[in-house]
Each structure stands twice: as structure tokens, then as C-alpha cells.
Image 1 (cartoon, rainbow, N blue to C red):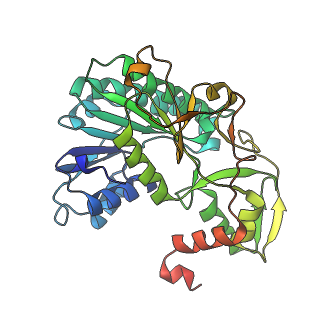
Image 2 (image 1 turned 120 degrees about the vertical axis):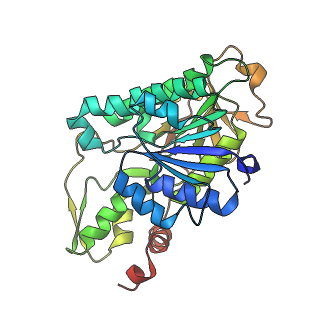
Image 3 (image 1 turned 135 degrees about the horizontal axis):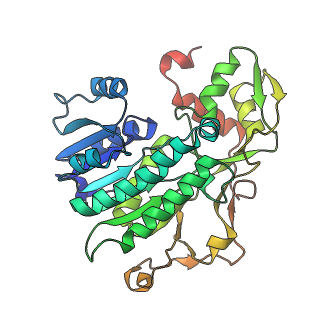
Amino acid sequence: MGFNVLNDKTILITGGTGSFGQKCTEIILNRYKPRKLIIFSRDELKQWEMAQRFSMSDYPCMRYFIGDVRDKERLNRAFHGVEYVIHAAALKQVPTLEYNPFEAVKTNIIGAENIINVAIDQGVRKVIALSTDKAANPINLYGATKLCSDKLFIAGNSYTKRDGTIFSVVRYGNVLGSRGSVIPFFLKQKETGALTITDPRMTRFWITLEQGVEFVLTCMEKMLGGELFVPKIPSMKMSDLAEAVCPACKKEIIGIRPGEKLHELMITRDDARRTIDVGDFYVIQPDFHYWGRRCNWNGANPVPDDFEYHSGTNPRFIGVEEMRTLIADLRTPGEKEK
């Protein structure tokens, strides 16, 4: 995978101090020579900590901007001269957002609108936004705000001039070991000798952090504007995940929490009529009147009308031993010895 056009270009990552942003920064710095790589986020402590790892003295292209996607004026300043934007900023903790719904709307929806408008005004070439499987047939506020955000970014292509800013979206499932995910939670619970499982039948899509970054960079290279990209990734039962983390631990069933699904979707049957299979991933195509002229996905095949990409019926599942290996790879040498 190569996106050589990133050499000598200015890239900005919103939410850049998060798990995705840090891994994306690592991969870009190791692989390319950007003119500037701007980390845009709200938390000064996280930026300070990240700057210890990616310092401006070791990496002269690095820049750290304090700001919030809710603040259009600050975005306008930060986007000046930027050519590529990776939008990873979001509020995403499901229970927290159920209790603080207006905050979710301000960041995930109004923030998306701000990014679209400022990117167009500042002449950004490409914007790719990160979504979630919870945005397909959402039942919680987080998923609903991300579905709205997805639709705003896709529609943003209708607001820009010819040869102007283009927008696309990447949607994938749970990220192994990301901050706030279930694996660090289980590893913490392991110390008590008991793991809590909401429902042993529950399944989720899984992707590693590096795979997620690689997919986003690949999609940014290939995007024509308006696509919603979905990778082909494996599923796993939560009961098998618990077994992979600690086979000797007691498993306590606590029931599905408000806002949770038994299984996740990434492509609904309603979206199937617009979805094509590109090999390693799917593309949900936009309903633009000009899309037929723009589309060049040669060799892609339409999926069946009744198709849905569902974590419970996914043809590929991760086994316990495979997940155990993946978890071991996430941990530091000191942690692996414990």
C-alpha cells in the first residue's frame, strides 16, 4: 500500500492524540516525508505526552494544535494550507453519551459540519472521516450521531465546486486494544479472577489498529469522493474473547446493557443495492446523479439485493488461539512476562 502523494504535503489529523491518531502518525512518519503533520486535539496533556514520542526536534514536520472541532474559527486557522485531513475526533463512549446527548451532537454532528465547511473554504484536497459499525441501523445515540456525520460528509461532495474538496468515509468495527475498548477492560478484570460478559452469544467485528490505519490511508489514496468504505474483517464471539484473555477466570453473565446490540452491522440490506464488492473491501456508493461519470471501480461486482454485512453471519471468525496471539502482540515485553 502506498500513498506517495503524502510526501511533501501537509496533513492534519483531528483527534490526533487518540489511539488511531498516534498509530497513524507513527506509520506516516516511518513511511513518508510530509511537509507538515498537524495533530489537532483538545487535551494539552495528551499532546505534551505525544510530543515526547514524536518531538519537533526529531520530526521537524510535526505540529501540535490545541483546538476543538466545535470551534469553527479555530478550525479555519488550523486548516490553512492543509491538503489532507483525517477526521478521527469523536465522542464515542456509549453510556456517557446516553447521559450527555447534547455534547455528542455538538462534537459528532456540528463538528462534522464545521470540518466540511472549513475544508471547502480553505481548499483542502481530501477529507476522510472515520465512522463505526454502530452507525448502521443505530440503536444508541453514539451510533445515531455517527450515522448523521457519515451522511453529512458524503453530502459534502455536493457543496464543493468542481475539482474542489472531496469527502469520503471509512467504517469499521472494534479496534483491538484501543483506548476504552473491551480488551484492556478484560485484562484489568483478569487480576480479580472474574470476567463480566454481557451475553455469551454476542459477536463483534474486530480489526487491529495498524490494519485500521492502513485501510484509511489506502482509502484516502483511492477515494473519488462520496464513497463509504467497509473493510472485510473477522468477527468474534465475546465469550471466545473472554476465553482468550483468561481461560481460568470465572465468567459472569450480566446481560446486555442499554444501547448495545447482540450483533453489529456494517452494511444493511437497504444499503446493499448501492454496495459493490471490490475484493478486500466493500464500497457503499452515493446516490449522486454524477456518480456514474466519476466511478472507476473496475472489476467490482454488485452484492446481492438481500446482502448484509453482519457480525453474527460473517463468513470469517477469529478463534480463541488466534485472538490470544493478537492480544499478546498488543502488550509490552514487560506485560507479556506477567
